[in-house]
Length: 467
Image (cartoon, rainbow, N blue to C red; front, side, top):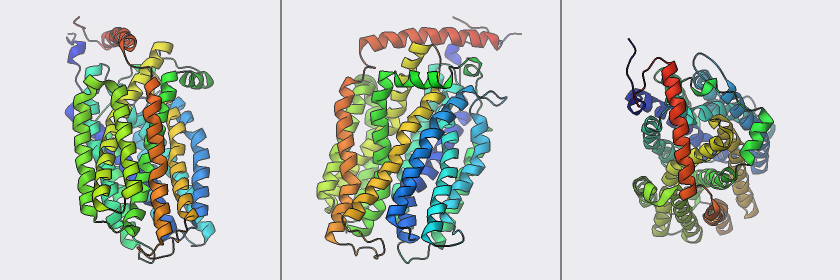
């Protein structure tokens, strides 16, 4: 007997929605604790790697990302297996991802500058290669797990809820756990190793609680260079990348700099963390409630403006606790707004690509997005270190012993570039094209196209579709 099922009734089980969101948060947690968080501080302040050598590692790392990310996105879109296009990378990549994370913190044989340079470089290559494979796959999983937009939205809500953890935990935990110059790092190393094992286990286990539809796997994909060209001729994608790059730069700079900030600037951390927490909560509530009214474009402009103002407040008045708390409140709004709005904006960009090519190419877009935004991580690290060096920061001094000039360089390297980039995004997004009546018509046409594809696929799976 054929089961009677309507497209409107497609349902993703709660356990599947929660577990894919856990995997997403666990993957991002390891990134936030290392590459976006304490890694540069740990190697320069604790292990003793010269800042110039650390900056050079980040430059080499950025070059590797230029090859790694778009290539994986292309391969991912073309993968065919019994598990689907994405799950094999998540399940079998998780153990190697964890090994790369743990390799950051353990003491390799030899403590010379050369060995520290090699440890940081090789660990980054292993960790980030697997991060690309896993994070890109998780990022597009909602489009593989469900066919209808209603069902996909039910997954994204849970991902947004869980995304607060990898945002907040590194900002709060790292200043408390991070050893300083001359401190014994053993306890920190043990804690980071245990966190890595736990997050890796969650990622691996999660793959047994959700599954992919094989709907998009059946589509033929464009050749690599044609696929790449189609991405860069999509004008909405280029404008999207300005905000995507900036958000990654700002998040990396802020998470890295907060460790140095609390080391050298005498401000009470509790009011600042309260401001951050309130900003995250209020930002999520406001943008979720107002997104339909404001639209993604206006919401992104508002978020960028608030985030930029917060950076300039801390840059100018970061030595005062009240001003810093107000600035961190703005950071919270910026962080949570970006977590919610960037995926929605990305979805619109991929929809426009489908309108142009008649193909769904989330993997390729995720890979090219990483190709463009991953250098933001390297640049944020290198620029911050350059400011420290230029203003006379001495990594060998104990906490709180830097000169006034070094403190100023810290604030400049931490806040100036993110603030300028965010203000620039506020201006450039004025020309973002995916808004208004014409875009609404295109979305309606895509809705009809999706409905027809969904209907054909469900019929092929043995369902009787009720129109």
